[in-house]
Length: 335
Image 1 (spheres, helix red, strand yellow):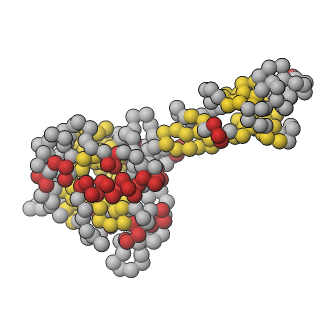
Image 2: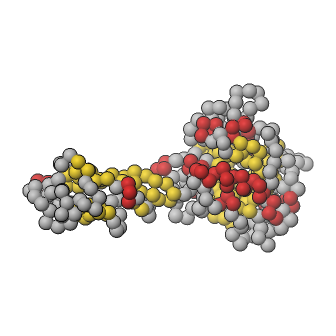
């Protein structure tokens, strides 16, 4: 169950499995012309970066916290990438699939009622093996305990769920469709008490409110004339667009004084403007919670080391995961 599939195979497998949930290019993309990891590790190494700091700061095994004579316990942070920095060399590999780790038996790593087992059974499970100059150390990015605030450190690979990670693609940074509604009294914007029920003197334009840079899906628009007790007919009673607006046609069946309820959906990017496309939160496999799992988070205020990685409960306030909990993976150096 704990077999490693190196770099290109890992990325291809992840891309294939994440695609149905909406992932697009980041999992299988090449480097973005930036120096990162070492030339020796090359394409074997994959770079993990955060939306909060951008693609030039990548996963790094700091010199702090390690046990004497071993890499175990070294704190893992994000550091500006450089093609001669062996501390930034990590081989991210697929160890299997979530379903293989779920169960109540002593050898099963994931609780069947955990968030990952409830939502991601067919999805891949990853480890990030510290591999300076492509020499795998046997120590992976993980935590000593899957608890709120636990710092990410190098821990022995393949011995516990605490070095395993699952992409939370339900909160992928990408296109998301949301529902909206609007009400109006014809003529649009005029209180009902100020008008008489009569044929419309002209077309009435009703703008629809959408989320950040969203676009209303034209085929989702339904206009219900509650006064008539029926839905209006597209291109007979009303037209949609341009500019996310519904135009009630004067020649249609609606009249002045009619009350309308307009329902629709709009699609927008589920991420802040600065967030990298296809960023995703990373769930730590040691967490047993069935909702709001513990995910990888970067502490931009930490000092020793700077930009320490740690676990915190996933924050989905407002339907958008914050930048500090969104991460992308790209291939190693391009030169």
